Structure formats: C-alpha cells, structure tokens
Image (cartoon, rainbow, N blue to C red):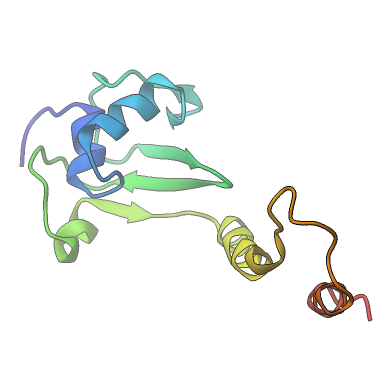
Length: 126
C-alpha cells in the first residue's frame, strides 16, 4: 500500500470514477467532501475517513479502509473502501428506475389515456 496518494487518484483507483480526469473535475466542482468540507484533488485521504461523493440524484458515502495509487480489480475494491451509503439514499435510485419509463421528453405531446393510467397505477393513486 502507498503511504500517500491524492484523493483524485484514490477515487479512480477504487473504481468510483471511470477516469482520473473525471475524479479531478468532481473534486474541483465541490462534489467530493470529507467531514462536510469539499476537497481539492490534491488532498491526501487517511484510513478511517468518510468520503461523500455526490452523484445526482444521491450522495454516496464511503469509508477509507486502505490507500492505493494503482487501479485495482473490482474483486479487490472491498479491501480499500467500504460503501456505507444509507438505505434511504439507495431507495431514491430504485424509485428513479421505476419512474424512468414515465419521464417524457419535452415536446413529445400530451400523455395518452393509457400512459396516464399506467402512471396512476405506478403511483398507487387508483
């Protein structure tokens, strides 16, 4: 394990972002926080810290278990990071998946009678 590694490199190495550039940009935009403070890409994380990553529509929480600067396989990720995202946040994703079908593109016109009934059934209004 490396002694010190930048947060953007660590986020990429544990597969939270597809590229290191994306991890750096998210840090610069303030979407990565440690203890409620947005961090710069050069910040050095420490084992035991809680890192929050805001990806629309939810905020993921991760606990740092170890440091690595090299991209690791998906099977080894659990040795370096622990996902502690609250279940309430994950439920938002499930709701979004179910509602995704009914989101209509702008300019497609009014929903048909069948679309409205399906939407009502999904939202348990009937």
